[in-house]
Amino acid sequence: MSVSIVTRARSLAERPLAAWVARIGQSTAVANVVRRFAQARRDVGMLVGPLAGHVPAPLVARPMGHEWPAAPAGGWAERKAGRAAADADRLLAPRPMRIVEVVRETPSAVTVRLDPGEDFAWVAGQFLTVSVPVDGEPLRRAYSLSSRPGELPAFTVKRVPGGRASTWLVEHAAVGQHLLVRGPSGHFACPSGARQVLAFAAGSGVTPILPSLEAHLAEHSEARATLVFGNRELAEVLFRARIEALERAAGGRFRVRHVLETEDESVQAVPGRMDAERIAEALAEYGAWAGEGPDAILSCGPAPVMDAVRAVIANVPVIEERFHTLGERRAQAPARAPVALTIAAAGRQVETRVEPGRTVLEAGLAAGVAMPFSCTMGGCGACRVRVVSGAVVHDEPNGLSAAEVASGYCFACVARPLGALSIEVAP
Image (cartoon, rainbow, N blue to C red; front, side, top):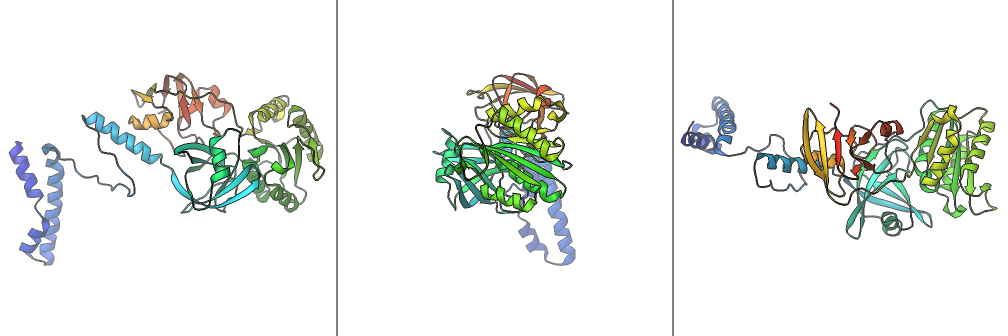
């Protein structure tokens, strides 16, 4: 087909439909002819348009409210890569949520309650990934949901020395501000069949544990639970009134054992740090109270406390497999410069790179690789890939198990390379 024929056909196809309707009239029979002609016109346009260098509009309208970058100059491959990068940003985009309440829990901690603007469901123990605007720089941090399912979502943050995001939230978060939020995600909760639950928490580590215990005790009338809760001083104990209310409501099925570094006569507490000795004592005391070993052990808090819990639990093999943790693990810093990334997927190999601050999933989607994902926050495991060579560091918290790490897997949505990386996407 010559260019002149293509041009002629396209010209006919693009004539205004209104002119044809005005000439022919408005009868039903004529309307049917018009509709058939309109369909034929669209078909001709779809067939001959690309031959003349015209790209048809997308069949599915793009969502409103997004700015779409212009297609990059270059050939087909470059345009495809540009569209894939834009799609990756859109698919992984967080949602804005308005702050409707800020509650001062302690001198160094606040609870931030959000209005999601739409239906928003979660289960106890899940977390949000919040983009905190500090000096014009968005800092992504994972915060456990501290409110009960069915309420407006809320997270509680305790100021960390030198922590830019936690300091901003504690000092500057205010009603009316908007935060960009991803989530909810994660699955840190009491196993449904657990009759006896023992939980260790330190500082803000109680944030995911308390809602999990509340939900479990409410759903299982035969369940019992003990919370061993370590803090520096009584004034820093998060949710003290809420914990006391749970003790009263549970009718003897829930107990709390405070461990305080600074003694306070106003509350019954074990003096000292939350170390291996105190943890072992609590485990022995729990056995005497419950009459049997716990069916599940939950743990969350700073790395030294989590290390101590692991060390004690490791000496009791019968309950070690019942251990569930959401600790603040130590991690190496990801690469500060672009690094090479090789992705093997669907029988082909793609070479790309990961820019500083980007995850393996973001880089893969931007390169046009069909990588599976769902929550984008390390909770569901849909994005699990195998590390062939190289190493990554994961955003915390996440749901990656020790067995998965030992088998060489990573969660691409929260994995950032330490250097050159090669991964394999499961078929």
